[in-house]
Each structure stands twice: as structure tokens, then as C-alpha cells.
Image: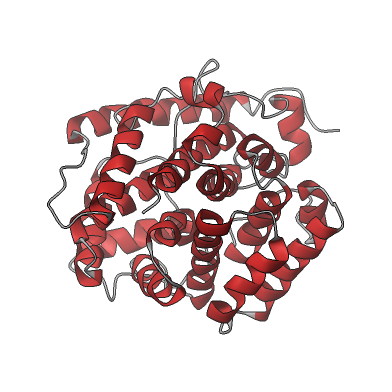
Length: 352
């Protein structure tokens, strides 16, 4: 297993998430006036923190280590981790994920806990599955398990599968040929909605025409920001990846400048390009100013190393965990900072 691809995926998710987080929910014009360009961490006085996008990706990594290649064990491990994750009172949790995780607590089995939603929650945690799985059939199986824990709308699963397939291709062949990448993805996406397949083709055509990512988002009717609807999120994120195939900074900045659900689009873009370039391609200044805890950069890096060891060995691997009390305290602080951002957004400058 390419350990550098795993580390690039995990750390790329974290930096994308943290850079996009302060811009979440803002239109491109309002974000530019209020915060300026997304060139550095801005969440907390020039420092960054991560949201549920990174946390869920880490839950997937831990569950993959624990499952040791057994799909049923992966399902049970991820369901258990999602339940305990909710007890930490995470801020900004999506409604579908909240409802599904509550259903897990109320005794629903992992096969019945999901709710009907086409949100991008499963997509934000699926890139890593594409990195570690060997082929499209295995990717589809594990993406289905991860998705249906929280989302049962086929569009959510298809979008998550597209992300995983893109990451799989990036880990093995890079991102410099969007046409080849899409051809690689298409057989596994034959059952996907016409909307997703058409938007993915539009993304490839957009890259060929040297169109910017914000211009591409505008062409999809997303001038006020990319929504959390998976068929909007995935084409825009992939267009940014294919436009900046070896530039995590460029891909992340491109999707953040589109506005809307910026932490998720940037986390996906960072994950996929990070997979292609590895840890050395992650912007060092973004990593050094990412100060979250207990899921710190050091902790995430150790998790990636443990996952790579698990994929290359049959022996039991000790992997990093987080202290529940520490998570709760961190999430209280995080919620306070989010509220402060909300109040700041009420003030000037305003869009004319």
C-alpha cells in the first residue's frame, strides 16, 4: 500500500477542511468582502481547526484498521464510532447524519439506520476508501457500507462512489488526464443518475476549455455558492482537482472561492489532490498553522501510518485514539468560535 497516498489523503482532507471552514455558507462576494482570499488559515486568529469532514475521515481510517479487511466488521466499527462521535456534541452536524446517528443510538441496526437524503456527508469521508481498496468492485462495496449508515438516497451513494473512484485513480495514475480518469470511473457509475454523469462530463469539458472552477460552478447555476447536494458538490470539487492536478493549494482555493459548502468541497478537493501528491505536496504553512486537538496534525499523521501498516500486515496494529473528555472540551470551544464567526457575519462590509 502506498503510505504516502494515505498520508496525503488524510492531511489533504484536514487542510482543505480547515481552510474552507471560515467561509462556509457565504456567497463568493460576501466571503471576499468579509474575509478576503483563502490564502491562509483564518478560523482562529490565523490558526485553523477542522470540522466533521476530517473527523469522519479519521473515523473511517480507524474503522478500516479495526476491520482488517472484513466488510461486516468495518460496518460495525464505523457505526459504533459514529455513535460515540455524536456524544462529543459536534457543532455543525448535518441533519441527515444527526438523524441517522440518533437512530443508531435508539437501536436501529446499521442496515436500517440511514435516512433518505442526497447530501454530501458520505462523500466527505469516502476518498480514503478509494485509496485503500484494490479495485472498483471492492470500492463500491465499502462505499455502500459507509454511505448507508447515514444516507439511503442512491444519489448520495453514487456521489460518494465518484469521490472514492477519483481518489483511487489519483493514487495510482495521478490527476493530469481528466478524460482518462472519467473513463476509469464510468463503468462503476453506470447506475448513477443522469445528472451526476452529465455534470462530471461537464467538469472534464470545463478543464479542457481552461475554465476556472468558479466559472464552472456558475455554469451549473451555483453563482451564490456550491450547495450540499451531492450532484453539485462532487462535479465542482473534481473540476478543481483536475484543474490543479498537483497543487493542493490551488485546488482548495478554487473551490473555496466558489462559496457555499466550502469546508466539504475543499476537504474533498484536498483529499484527492493530496492523494496524488502525497504528504510532501501538502502546503506546509497550512499544516503548521492547523492547531486542532486532540485530532492534531501529528495525531492524523500517526493514524495514516497505522493504516498503511494495517494494509501491509496481518498483525494487530495499535492506532491512535482520542480521549472522550478532551473531545468534549474541544467541541465546546469549537462551538463558541463558530458562534463568534456567526455574530461577525452580521456586521459590515455588506454586499451591495
